[in-house]
Length: 115
Image (tube, rainbow, N blue to C red; front, side, top):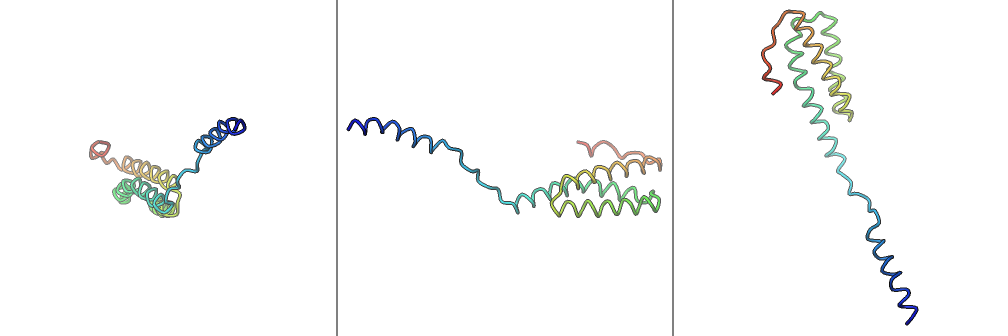
C-alpha cells in the first residue's frame, strides 16, 4: 500500500507528461499546397502578361525575344513548384514592359490597377 501511494504521483506525472509531449503536426496536403502556390504565382503573372502584350508592339526584336523567353521561364517555374522565382520574373517583366512603354511615350492609363 505504501508503495502504491508512492508510485501513484509518479504514474500521474508520467500520464500527464505523455499528454503534454509534442505531437507531430498534421501534414498539409502537398498537392493542394502546390496547386495554391501555382495559383498565387499565376495571379502575379497575369498583370505582367497584360503589360507585355501592350508593350510588345513598341519593343525591339531583341526585347520581344527576351520577354517571351522570360515569360516562358516564369510559366514553367510557376507550374514546377518555384512560385517565388515565377513571381520575381513576373515583377521584372512588368518593370521592363513599363520601361518600353515609357520609352515609346505612352501615358499610363491610370492608377486604377493599383487599387
